[in-house]
Length: 32
Image (cartoon, rainbow, N blue to C red; front, side, top):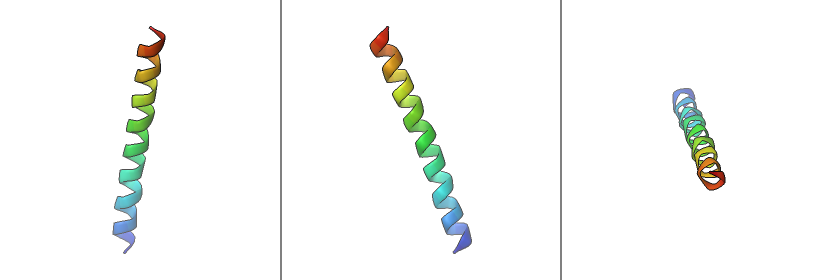
């Protein structure tokens, strides 16, 4: 149970970082 929740939070963290990267690159390309 603990391992599963850890995996879930780990994936959520990577997903969040990916979302931030996508937003930053989108804003940069939009500005440039």
